[in-house]
Image 1 (tube, rainbow, N blue to C red):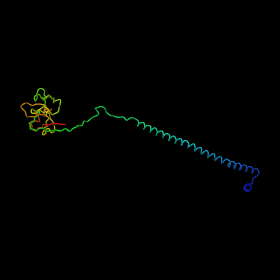
Image 2: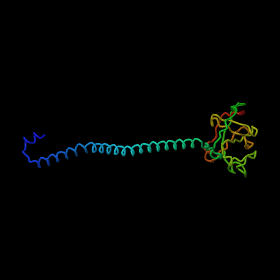
Image 3: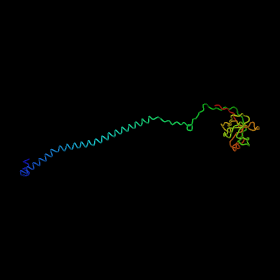
Image 4: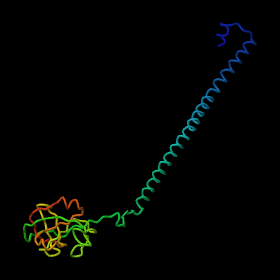
Length: 214
């Protein structure tokens, strides 16, 4: 170094001493503090990394804990729902429940006799019947009943069941009334409306006396 100093710049003794001192200070500062600064930098970086890792780890732990608590609460709720008694909504009012009673036996119709008669029609008018036009000869009130299933016949007993297939198909009539004695073999069919009775007129058809069994 002394040779290099003499060749590059000719310096005095004081200048040489000052230069050497400066160089020595620079080397001492750089070589002495550089490792310490590097160590401090490394430690600072580690601390910062640890500081960042801690919140992340805590956040992960909190998320896992919350998820576990949520799952636990959901399972508890499901168990509670399953543990509840099952509510039955059975109606007790007969207004909302309709019970259909099916027949226990088959209804059969047996034809007892067949004969041909003059068939007419009437309705409940005093001029066609008597003072109580709604009451039949056996005391049945056809007006209250309201169904056209009553006939008047003098040659059959009260309560006899009759069908007239040619005119009324499968309809079943019951003998409940009597006619004038001058019509011993005629059948008179009761109808609600006078117009229908007049329009029916006079017909001839076969009647079937039947027996209904269940």
